[in-house]
Length: 476
Image (cartoon, rainbow, N blue to C red; front, top):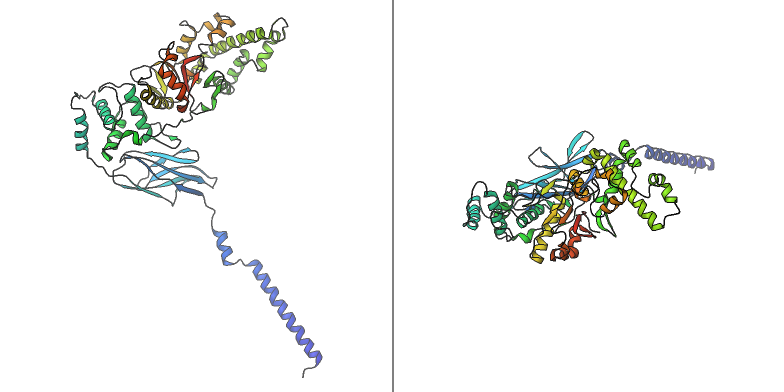
């Protein structure tokens, strides 16, 4: 039997050993990561998230691809699409956080795979994720398709000069869409052709205006033939998409007030002038905003004159503002000539010299066809786009720019009710239409149609001129 002292010593040694072992284990745990923790630390953060959308096909050769690609790495600033088997980068257009691109001249009945490329710093990378789609097979080859088209043109004399137009009209007719008489490129043919090409180059709120020429050209004809070759029984109205008003360069200045809808060009001019010290100084010399400090300072005496009634003072100040606006435009003529240029490409209306920007014309094409179906009548335009010189011609009542200083404030105030100051007119930006005949247009079925439906296409009226409508690119 152990002595009591020996037993106590043994117990003490055991306790010391156990405590030492525990301390060693805790220390090792503190400095040695577990295998799972090490794996988590070694995994890099994702550079992006991506989600592909179903490819939109038109015919056998034309498609729109899209994907939601969201970089999580701030170094990724540029991206687009790339088709498998190629090194050609396709630029992407970003709309509402989604990337889009139009593909043309694809091979029928062929599988395609595409990835997203992106620039990470100075290095180009591609996503591991990819999307696969297959183009439809043709139901009719070129020979059979041409026989089908020329059976429609059996009574027409086809020459090198009219072939593209006649074939285009035949294709539209075979798709069940209205055209003008064969050989005439009129408003109905142009509008329906535009609707087809717009449909093939737009998806959601995305539009690629590159190939929307509003002409009977090789691109449009090839697209029509491709649609027919994919399904000869296709009805055009079955695939024509609804029109979606699309914002453009000046849509931020769209306004709707008690005078109707218009672009607030005064604000646009002021914002642009603020970038040029010389023009800013000129605007201060000829202030036309009655609420500005420059205007109040210049006309302090009139503002304080007790002999005026409130109405008389308001009219006097409005006259000064009107005259100053004309003088500012006159003095800044060269600057105005640049600033007031349309920001989008101009399209010439069929059988006319009138022009609209491409975005406004697409809206007009849809409106024209729907109004034609509703009333049996076709819009005729009196005037649309005007350059700065043409606007001075109208404003001066067919004289010249010298009216800016030759006439008094009252003349300018009255004139600006009916003809806007050059540089400030919505016509100069290619989005305004005066319909024919101006003095009687308000009594027509077409005017009634515009009042009821014009806003659906993004067009708004200047109320004191029933014939004057502006495309704003949005619906209020």
